[in-house]
Amino acid sequence: MTYTSPIPVTDAVVYNGSGLELVDLTMAYGDIDVIRGVSMKVEPGTTTCVIGPSGSGKSTMLRGINRLHEPKSGDVLLAGESALKVKPDILRRRIGLVFQHFNLFPDHTALENVALALRTVKGLGKQQSLDVAADRLAEVGLADRAHHRPRDLSGGQQQRVAIARALAMEPEVMLFDEVTSALDPELVKGVLNLMASLGQRGMTMVVVTHEMNFARRVADQVVFMDAGKVVEAGRPEDLFDKPQSPRLRLFLSEVL
Amino acid sequence: MDWFDNIVKTFFDVEAMIVVLPQLLGTGLVNTLIISIAATIIGVVLGMIIAVMGISTSRWLRIPARIYTDIFRGLPAILTILLIGQGFARFSQTVFGPSPYPLGILALSLIASAYIGEIFRAGIQSVDRGQLEACRALGMSYGKAMRLVVVPQGIRRVLPALVNQFIAIVKDSSLVYFLGLLVSERELFRVGQDAAVLTGNLSPLVMAGLFYLIITIPLTHLVNYFDNRFRTGRRKATPPKSGLDEVEEIQPQSPVALTYGSNT
Image 1 (spheres, each protein chain N blue to C red):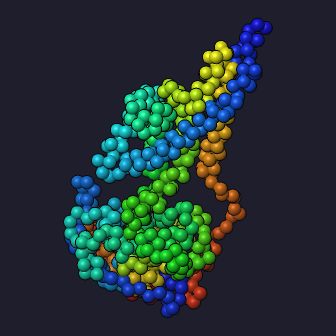
Image 2: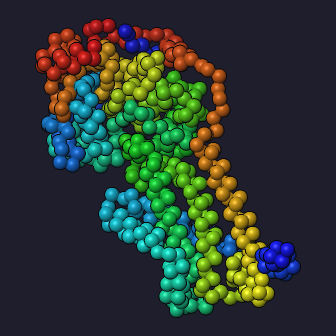
Image 3: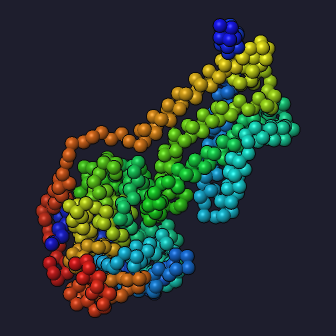
């Protein structure tokens, strides 16, 4: 399967993603450590796919990167500086996050969904925020759906609005949390295509996914997590074709 | 048919009703509406504060909100009204003058705010957590996220419950009569009761009751209408369509294959 960009790559927006590094990150819910010393390095403009069984801490780790869930120890380096020393609200403008269940604002149109944070967080004027939002919607192929509310859009369209909403903030890194898991099967590829094209155009991305084909074709690096730890990491062809650890072999034998 | 005549005379004496009608309309209805609407407005404002405190992460906000709610929801309305109406009478005299009217409104507002606070809290907490998370992920502060996204969604969901609360306030407004109102301040119940005592006939009270029903019954039906509409939504049935249409929508106009990895 090839992933094709929904827009001609040549005349599309080019991104300038920053590097991201996790250094011995631990995170806890109450007394229970759910992330136990995770380290990984994501080079600027590359795509890292995180795979692993459910409950392995993949989503929690993403929430540690933008501090929706405050890490317990370790560090997150964004463009070389510690994310823990930046105010969370400022940090989150630099790191986009897209959710499994879209989390669009139901009483806003697609356009307003994208424009809201531009106006209230970035401080753009009303017209300017709508203009930027319209551009971003066009980028994800939804120019003619701008005035639809989420309930009038398909899951795939909603997810692309959510991606546009995150992109509009001009993030340096994009995090994707199982963004195609809630989609009907015929709509998955459209969203994956869009993500592949973002990566192609220089966005730094961390993608938690169960789409092994996507990980194999698009990722520069694949990370296999289990029980809150990184068990194996490397180039996709190494992980998928020559898995070293028994846990990864077991996992792959179940999902492929 | 003596007993029948008796009943008609006691409850449905048209003459006695007509005599009291101007007072019920001019004084009683006006005051009932003023008291109820004022208490509701203050109750909504206080209730929102109580609700936001109640869901705060700080226990120093949460616990006082809890205690406030428990007290004003747990006491009989009449007791709260008497305690506040008489307890603060001297203080009220220096601010509002001798009338207990403002204290009656205040007492009703405090009671209402405890209920409304719970209604708002339930509404806000019923909003999917993902909404707050999405706002925070975009860099919005907690306050902004609540104000712009979460609270408005919560309020919309509890509109029917708020109308119900208003109905309860309209009925409870009759309790203010315990504080001893001036003639011009009397609300529906007191006007009806005064007339009933004077004529030795219950018909004026029945008339007052009719006025309450004229306010409350349409509101009850409004609630049902709201409820139905929110539950079923405004969606009309649409003809079947294919999810494949969307696949075409995002097909590239000039496809550019992305060559990533070594397997493509």
